[in-house]
Image (cartoon, rainbow, N blue to C red):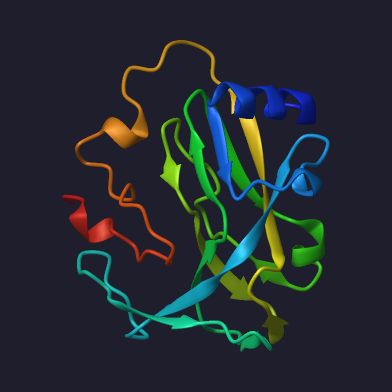
Length: 178
């Protein structure tokens, strides 16, 4: 079950959902619009290795915009910091973003209950597109969890993406044993 706008507001009031900054105008019928933060990052190497720490370089998006190129994976970040303590958050692209040929996540659209951070975006484009800091980039949808949760994401000792940040975070696949 997806939470409605009224239910999202109730959960914010209870403190089980936190969105900072929160703008009432960004609340849709059953989602909340999130915006592109001011930082992007790209990997330093063109060939990535899943067993190695692939380092990234951060840069600030100029106020007058930045043109994303094809054949490059950009890591972006949401302006909004969120906490979700009783629901499963899903991040999806907005239709207006998709109609510009911008994909905001390759595979990581689902958050875990207990995720408390900004969202790193895996951005790719089908043709060059100029983007701007603060532009609407996606929407959060909240699902009800059935059953009791044993371990929240933010209390797992091996949670790889729990350090609070305002910048995109590179893949931590290299921390897995395989």
